[in-house]
Image (tube, rainbow, N blue to C red; front, top):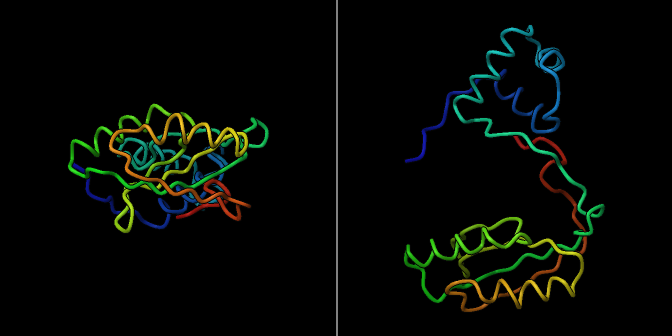
Length: 158
């Protein structure tokens, strides 16, 4: 069962905004930025972590430096949308490393995938060997990204 939203004040939101841009910021710097002393800032940070508002920290990787700059969004229509079929599709998607994101969509198709690969040739291989063979896939439609104008990590979203 999903947890209900926490009541967050402006200091909590300021912490989240600052850390979403720089998760390695020291507590001292974080306290300075939000206008509180170190101890209450640290207590708030621990509470946000304990309550599951902050679920972790990670490195943002430049995809060009690891030869994964090609991005395609793939619309997927399934032949079966009962819960068992959705579960099977979701489990299989998690096994394909090139699929960076997968979202269940309300609309003309069932899922939207964000796929990262080296180039169009490697994307074509991922589509043929992995995506098209996922459980219950009836059809796909690919949209190739020409330029990323804004991606997660570029700035705070809170």
